[in-house]
Length: 104
Image 1 (cartoon, rainbow, N blue to C red):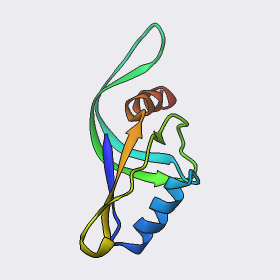
Image 2: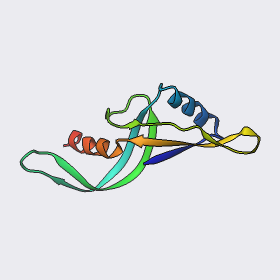
Image 3: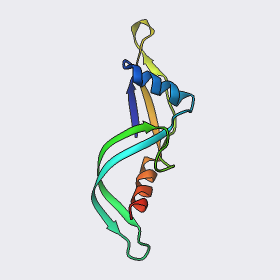
Image 4: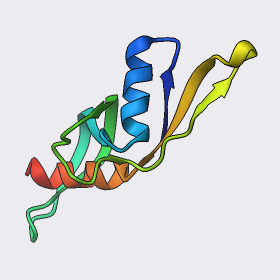
């Protein structure tokens, strides 16, 4: 997945700077499980359908796999102002799988 920060907002510029220098790279993933199946042998729960509510940048993610993989600079507009910064995200799928195991 990819996220975007609106760099017209002061707080987003702060978060972007922290992400670029590696100070903040965790993600909080909020979702509601719509369908899950539990494997009777292993006891693991597999999430099959989710309603994703939000993904937020955080300092300490609950699941270590939920991390930002890269941060791009904002796109230049007239006058050198930056409007959006693209943020590719690593391992959201793995983080959701880990969440299913964590919630078993």
